[in-house]
Length: 183
Length: 210
Image (cartoon, rainbow over all chains, first blue to last red; front, side, top):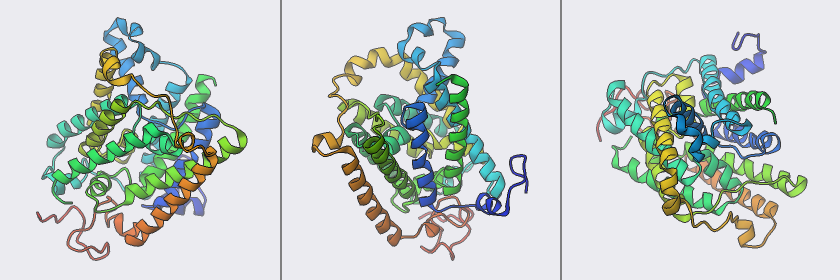
């Protein structure tokens, strides 16, 4: 079995070719990522400021005044910003390798959208995905963190701010989900 | 840390993160929507396990080694307004800002639009930030943590919280096992027709309105 360009052992093969792991194994692995984050990068695990890094570089292509926009400018360069950008890229690569190893390839959109909203084409799903991504990251930037930064990392640091942001997050997420058809 | 090492470390950590997100199926929009409809608790199980692990890790790193922690500033209106928008967006997107990248890796095409929307959201926030700052992002009360509020050592409250989370996880797993919640097509959706993961029709093929 050739997954990433080298032969893997039978045990590794069994682990990677599984379509699903226990949520507890996966959760522990994610939680352990705090060790290199705190010790080597000197920050907590987070993902949503990487969107600002990308946005700032996109904006810099057509707006020469970006260097004077403090918030965008400070997210453009530096080890911490580029570490996080590399990490979200790594998430896509890791998920792709995992999917190829197990064969759990996904179609253009999840079947949940048909069940919840009668949406069954990429064309009708795309604007909704764009809008969802927009308010999701806008909200994460206002709150200064997302499910990872406020959720997984903030609660693990016993931060009061994160407990409020996460409570608000679940409240809104549940409310919107209950407006959809029962899946 | 120099930039190339940070990037290499980011790629490695991201690959492990992506592996965990894909294998646990929490990147599935089906897992997010059915969690938020309180039909399954797969997302909460992964989320709480990661939090509990982090609490134990930080109890050791901070309590024994003395590593600095980085709690975020408490700004009530920003945490509430931002948290509400984030949550609404998560359900509409069927993803979190991090898990959407795993959706791209696994082949979902709409995830590209979610990321594009996220970049647009970050761009709008970047331009509005000077305007939002006085009304929404200031007036904070420091970076309080619960151990400071109740005057106990961080490591002690962290370990107690982790123990409470483990108790909650045990109850959730007794309520419904993760194998039933994952869906027979591994898309995180409850199987149609029955509450039993083994007898349901193929998920996503038959979907009677109800």
